[in-house]
Length: 267
Figure 1: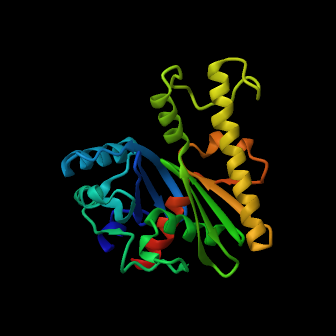
Figure 2 (figure 1 turned 45 degrees about the vertical axis):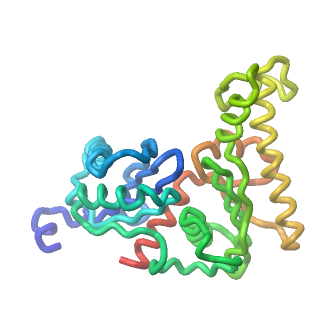
Figure 3 (figure 1 turned 45 degrees about the horizontal axis):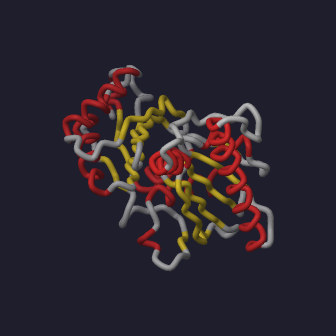
């Protein structure tokens, strides 16, 4: 640190956050609560340590960030087969220790489900950020390969949740199984009642998903007996949330914010 300050770089204590999802790896670099960038690369299960390291280094170079200015990093992952590969890659680039969210990591979250060890690290991290930034009780919707909903009560307890097929997962299954249906862009139709095959599919996936989210929120409120706050994150959240009836806050950086909080608890 003395060397850093002598070079006039006293504000360089940045950290790298990495979320390994089934489809994308989301990479963020921040200082405190300020994010310098958030980028996505494809999740590749056969990629080597060196190839991932080159990808991470390229992203840092794009934003003119010197890897030696990064004090450490943290990873959440739902793809165990590549977690250690990505960890080694990040450490190779920044030359510092990178934590992995899992056993032994302090989160401050009280998990009251049948088997807390089964809870995905991404859901843990989302919940940690949700408790920190939003009012309780809270529903966290994460739109990824799967669409997940996490329920946190007013005592900051993770009660459980729901898992549904993701938006793109549903679309892929539909086009694979139905010979006359083609791949479509994830955008709203010209009218709610579609007048052609493409608009019918768009209406079904956009409004159908929105209605399912609204319906699940209604059921959660009925079970809890009170209104809930709702925050949504994930790759396609912005395509669905505007068509929901409930007030839902969009937070694309929710998971990275949660990683940032957990990093501070454990560094």
